Length: 200
Ligand code: GRF
Image (cartoon, rainbow, N blue to C red; front, side, top):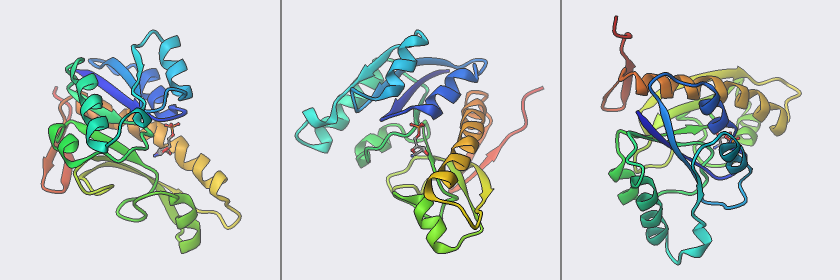
C-alpha cells in the first residue's frame, strides 16, 4: 500500500511510522505545508521523497487544498496520513480521500477536539487523557475512531509533561493503526471501526 504522510513541523509521528517498517507499506512521499518543518529533514535523510507546499503562497484555502491534492495524487496513494498536520482541510479535500485519510489527535476524543488539548485536559480536572487515531470526516476531530491510548493525568502535570507522555503513546498507536489499514483489517460501519483478525 502506498502512503503519503502530511506534516507541519517536527514530524515525530511520521518518524515513528517510517521506523516501524510496516510490511506491505511504502511511504511514497512526505509533504509539509511549512517549508521549514524539521520533519522534512528526517524524511530526506531517510531517502524519502519530501516536498513542501507553502500554504502562505495561496490566496484561499481552496487553492491550497487543490495544490495539495494535486501533489498527493501524483503519488496515487492508498492512504493519506495526517501526522501533526496543522491546517484544517476543506470539505472537498476531505471527501476526495474519505475512507483513506486518517489523523492523530492528542486527546481521548470526543473530549477536547481542536487546539490546546493538554491544557484543556488539566484544566478540566480529567484523570485520564490520551490520543486518538481516527478517519477524517468533514467535521473536525469527529471521524470514526480507529485506536486510542490513555495516560493518567498526574497532580503535578504541566502541559509539557502531559504532552510528552501522550506523544509516547501516539508513537505506539499511530504505526499500529497504519499497520491495520495496510493489512486491510479496518471495517468502518457508521461511526464505529472494528479491527478484523489478521488473515491466517
Ligand atoms: C502531535 O501531538 C499530534 O497529535 C498533534 O501535533 C503533534 C505533532 O507532533 N496534532 P509531530 O509533528 O508528529 O512530532
